[in-house]
Length: 227
Image 1 (cartoon, rainbow, N blue to C red):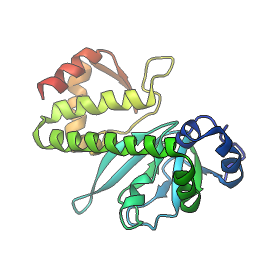
Image 2: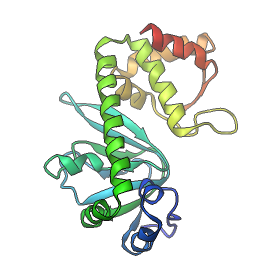
Image 3: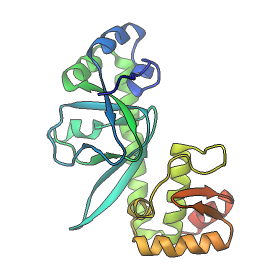
Image 4: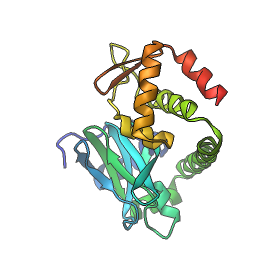
């Protein structure tokens, strides 16, 4: 647990539930602090509730082959985690791991079900979220099957910048490892390392340790389009 707490305004639930419902959320929610690298929940765990990201960064991933993982998406402030487990035999089909120190709001499955029954606007928005993620997942599978690896890595870099934003020096605000980039792009660390050298030489990106700056986003978009 963490002394800090959410402000009942920024998370997915608070933004879409009716104002009167926030008083109950304030009583029932739990604030959970997760350190960088810590697992929030694991694939196959029993679902007990749902998480809303208040601050920090998270990767959502699942097993891919015997010893590999595929990063399904990245999550930042305002996003939700664990909702996919609500429709698959009450177990999480994915895992979630903190990429940075992260503060989460957690509500139990019982409170979530009560929210569905009393907040039709929230239920509708969550259905839209499911539909959007399904479309994105279908597009991701198509890209993994058909897009060249350089295009997939370029798309991953653009996605990370879009989700986490940039700091004052124009670097992506959350340092993301080459391995995590490879796991999202469906390739190997060695391939990402080689492509980073090429992109750096062409001044399309700049790096400083794990920090990444996209200097020429248009060039990355061209690589995605050509893929």
